[in-house]
Image 1 (spheres, rainbow, N blue to C red):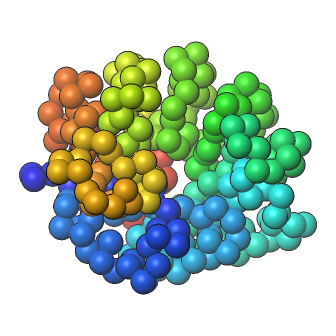
Image 2: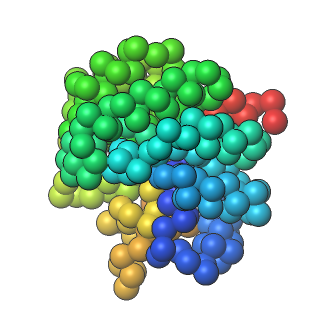
Length: 261
């Protein structure tokens, strides 16, 4: 492979990767994935993500996922601010709204989401966003703040995509796009995402690309499989994979303010 990639979203703290972090990162490097963004989903995993990012010279986020919003305390802002003091933490999140599973009450999700957006605005950091079946509320809340960032693992419709783009957000595409069953609508929408707003991510260990051949015995996704997403995205744009790799790398550096590092 003649190009390198950045995985814009990896759940490396997930228990499926326990005791495997070094091997996972080594395989990623061998596959041309030179950097990754390790996602924090609550205070504990944000701390662990930072520790992994520091140890392996990667990047991380610090935030509370909507599933875990009910765990947020009055110390949330102070806890995230301490984590965000590290040069490895480049975004607040994963934060947002999830009305698909409702693991936290919706009013709590909205409150904790607003708190994190306000903190990102105060700290001048991008946000790493999650949304499922909640685009109307999500868009309404986002418009209350002056933020920048990426909508991670986009799986919405064309109307939502247009509004997220109008807000200046970048769009993260995962292995969902490689799914010939449930990824059809996303496959149709991808070419309408401007190339200078596109990021690609595995969301590992979830959403393993169904285009991986031969099909692995394990259904566990990992950053080394990011090239399969790059290939599918390139086919949808009808451009070379190298162009997708170059543009998504440039976009990652731009949205997370890494151009001068």
